[in-house]
Length: 253
Image: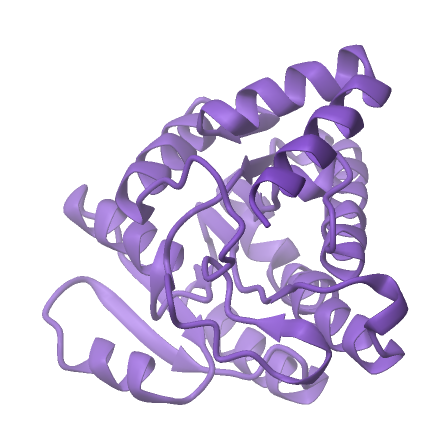
């Protein structure tokens, strides 16, 4: 099961898994991306769902459990970004980012607890470098990803007795929507569209790294050179990481 499975990184992971013979349940909002999946051959089941509406998630979760009582891999990939200074960011934007990036994942995880336990499978959360370190002009986004990592890191301890693994992938910049931010009020934009990203990686390469790490049940999967260095430096010296990040972001302006 992959949320945000109709495009970008979600679709790249679905393509990779289908190439290995997996059946993929692809959750996304109604729209052209999801409609296009229905026209593609392959072992996939597209399902429309707005993850910000709890009743929709409950309905879809019940349908998935009825048809697929055991799920080997649940990937929480759906997300949006937010770019802009905190002083200029309305509180509504913070709530909107959390509704998708955090609560959307938590609501779906609650629906899939039993199927993943039954398969002794894996919960895989797609976080970000901003999930473990600060990121300039991303207060709402970084907060949502920090919350996501806190939830799934804690869930790991609870689900371990059931033979369930919990992995967290932390990409740096994946170019899934370059030049297509579809920006909304408050700086909210499509993921992978940030103009100030560095060392961009393609979705197919990122999918390969993430799924390889999940297969080995790695707890933390930094994705890309920048993510690996960020993970190391932020753990060794948070102050040094912040200084380097601020200098790099100033260069990109």
